[in-house]
Every structure is written in structure tokens, then in C-alpha cells.
Length: 259
Image (cartoon, rainbow, N blue to C red; front, side, top):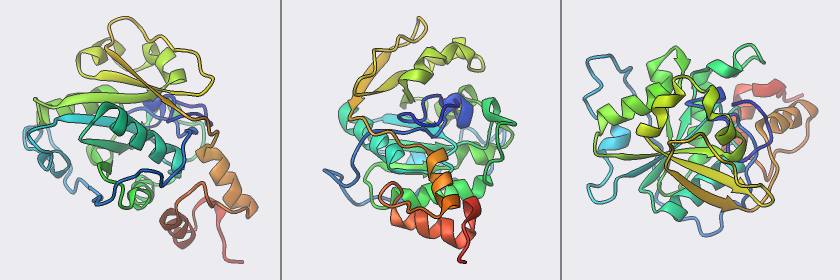
């Protein structure tokens, strides 16, 4: 997934379980419930441990089992990512949506240096704040190696076989699913959720997918623009939440300096 400036990470396979940190349309804070917890996977799964539920999933109620996966590099996360997650969760009545932070997005390899996975996960955790039902996940980072959506979906299915999975992508990514690793297996593992901005034409994914469509207002914002803003000394508000700005400053990411 690699075309900065789309809603939400148009091609998740490029960044995380796919994901390209592109823009999304929405306004943070409107109708957003509180009481949210950041979730972190503290163990590195092994082949024999996949049957043991991780804490992200074990907390889910037995009544509603819908889980959204929004993948990306989140370098850095911005309000577009949060808006997409909140909108999809509300529209489809999902129990939660995971912002799945990619370890090594294979389709982005060599395009540009990425921030360290730990930094990107910490920024994503900070961005979530008190948004109810929205959580950061380090599942792909804990697994290590190149990040493929197929591996993530298989792992989530082994952890919680009764969990219905919803793979969230932008309309551009939906058109490029045929380029994803082992793409022919994906429709059997998850429902595809296509997030469409105002003005986007309906994207038709490859045959075989069960598809849900969620519309959002148009707001062009991208992680690449946020990185440029830091380098140029321009403000990140209101595109990045204050806690993430503080983390960027504290870690000196994207060329930030106090001078």
C-alpha cells in the first residue's frame, strides 16, 4: 500500500497488514465515545502459541464478535486514521477496530526509511487516547519479519476462531488487492470494508470478496505531509493529536529539533 494522501491507508498490504498512511476524511472529537484502553501484545507469538488468545482479543465480549483491522505504517498516525476507524466501527457496529502497526511492509521496502516499529507503535497508542473501541496493536511487530495481511488474518483466526474479521482498506487499495501476497486466500478469512471519500467512485475488488462500503467526508491528509511539516517547522495541529505531537518532539522524529 503506497500512495500517501488517501483514506485510510489505501493499500494496507504496503504498509502493515497492508496500509499506506494516506489521508482520511473526518473531524476528530464529534460523537466519539470515551473509556478507551491502549492495547499492546507483550509476547512474541511462536508457532505453538497461536492458540493462546492475546489480550487484545480475550477482552472482547461473547455477544458481539466483530473485529476491524486497519493496517498501516502510521508514520506518524493522524486524525484521518482515527476518523476512518471510528466511522467504520460505528457504521458496522463492530466491537472494536485495531490500528495494526506494520513491522516490515513488504511493498514499501526500499521506498524510504521508516521510523522504528516501536516508535510507530508508541505513536499509534498515543493517538488512540480515550476513543472507545479503537486500539493500537503490535501483533505484526511481535511476529517479526515482513508484514503480510494473510499472516495477520490467519493468526487472528487461530487466536479466536469465532471472531468475524473485517479488513479495512481505501478504495485505491481495493483495486490492487490482486497484488497482495496470497491474495486468493484473503476472501475466505475476512469481510472487506472499503472506505470511500466524497467524490470517489465505487471501487470493485476482485471477485470472491464479501464487501461492506463506508462513506466519509473528504479530508486530504497524509503521513508524508505530516513528516514534511515537522521538517519545515510548520504546526501539526489540528492534524495530529497533541499526545502524538509530544511523542514526536520527545523522540526527535522526522527531523524535529528544539532549536
